[in-house]
Image 1 (cartoon, rainbow, N blue to C red):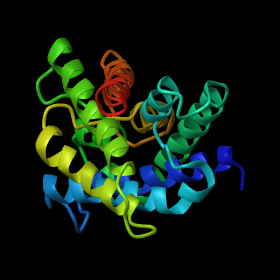
Image 2: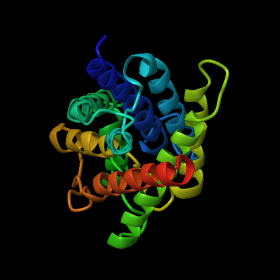
Image 3: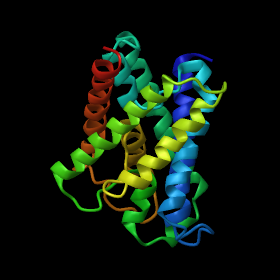
Length: 236
């Protein structure tokens, strides 16, 4: 398997399990409906863990354009490979969202809340505020990338790193995710948002494209700042 396919498959798995847990919580007549934010944050943490375990040995399991760009910024990843990785991540995220749509196929008609349907695919702010929402995504992704670099500097039992990164995702979701839904990953938001826009989802509403730039640029800014901070402060 090539690194391109690895990133595609890993990101697809991330979205299947991450979007899947949101669908279970918010869609009508799901057996997991109303199980709450804690279930969502744990589900996303395990989604990242499974994606990383699946392809970590093949592509490094970035699964996130913000992480790919951040690593390239501090010379831990080749800039020449950045576009290939981002394309793979976007395709994987889109395909993962399509699979989530198929999995919950009977539930879309049973759910009247258009916002809930969008939430299965993409993030949305609790309080729309451009600066506040952008800062939330910058801060959340800063913690993500800094945490991944810090975790990587420690020695663990072989194979434990993805599990620890999953715990980091849960921590970010519980502590910082309540403002914007913690996209902290441009592919995680943009790929599924595009799927929401294109798929014939019963009773869907707007894909909220006016907000879509925030979970793209916020994570990239936060990731680059975190990588530079780590390099200057910890590696100087």
